[in-house]
Length: 427
Image 1: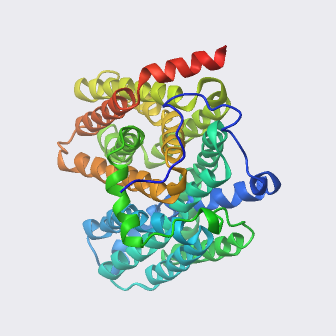
Image 2: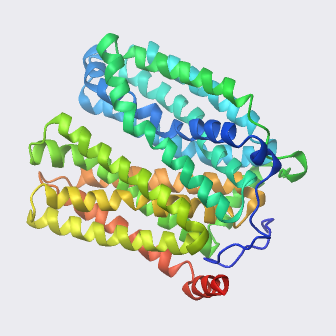
C-alpha cells in the first residue's frame, strides 16, 4: 500500500521559504492556540506526576502492597502507548477536535473512576481508561502542530510547547503534595476531573486544523495497516529510534534515581526533589536554545548533536555508577547532561517524522508517541529487572539507550544530504 505524501525534503536540509509556512489560523490565534496545545500535550505527565506523592497513602487506604499501587503507573504508560496507535488514524479520518473531545470525556470518566475506586484492581482499570483518553490529546496536539506549521517553524513550535509542558512535571508533585496536605488522595483525581473539564471548554476555542478535503477517508483497518508501511521507511525509523531510545533512558532515570539518590547516596527526599527539578529545568533551557538555533542549523543537525551528547553523558554515567568515581556528583552531573539533551532530540525528531508524510500526520504522531512511551516502559523495566543494590543498572541502561539514539540518528538519517543542505543554505 502506497502512502500519500508530499515530496519530503532530504533528511537534514534546512527548509526553504517556500516550504516553511504558518497557516492563517495559527497566525490569527497564535497565543490561544499555543496555550491550548500546551495544555493538551501536558496530559502525558500531569495525569501521573500529580498523584505521585499520594502513592503511600493510596496503598494504606486501599489495603494494597506497594507493587499493586505501582502497577497503576505502568498500566497507565502501557495504555497511553497503545492507545495512541488508535487515535492517530481516527484523527486523520475525522479531524482533530472531535477525537480530542471524545478522549477528554474518557479522561474525565477515568479520573472520576479513580477517585471512587475501592480496590487497587479497580484503580488500575480506571487508570487504563484515563490513559486511553489522555493520549488522544497528546497525539493529536502534535498532529495539529504539523497542520498549522511547516519547516523550521514546526520544530520551533514543538520546542516551545515542550518547554511549557515541562512545567507540569516540575510542579506536579508539589501541587499533588499540597492537595494531599489539605484533603485525601481522592481529591487529586477530582482535581484531574476539573482539569479535564477546563480543557474540554478550552477546546471549543481551538479551530479545526484538518479540513475535510485533507482528511484520509480510507477504512480504519487499512489506516491502521499503514503502520507497517511507515516502519519500512528508513527516515521514519531514524527519527522514531532517536527519540524512542532517548525516552527509554529518561524513564530509566525516573525509575532509577529515587533509589540511586535517596537509598544509595542518602539524599533527603526534599533534596531529591531539587535535583529532579534541575533536570526539568535543563530540558526547558535546551528546548529554548533549540527553538532559537533550528532555523540557522537545521533540525537534523541539532538532533544529531543532541544524540552525541546523550551517548557521551550516558557512558560517563555508566563509568561513574560502576566505579563510584565522583560519588553523588558522578551521577548528578552526567544525568543532568543526559536529561538536558531532550531539548535537542525530541522536538526535532517529532517535527522531522511528521514532515515526511504530512497527509498522515495523526498516524505518524501516534507511531512516534507509541515508540517513545513503549521504549520508556522498557527502560524503566530493565532498571528494575537488573537491580543489584547499586546505581550501575540505571547507568548501564541509560548508556545503552543513549548509544541507541546516536546510532539511529547517524546510521538511518543520511549525513551527506544534511551537510550539503546546510552548505547550500549558507550560500
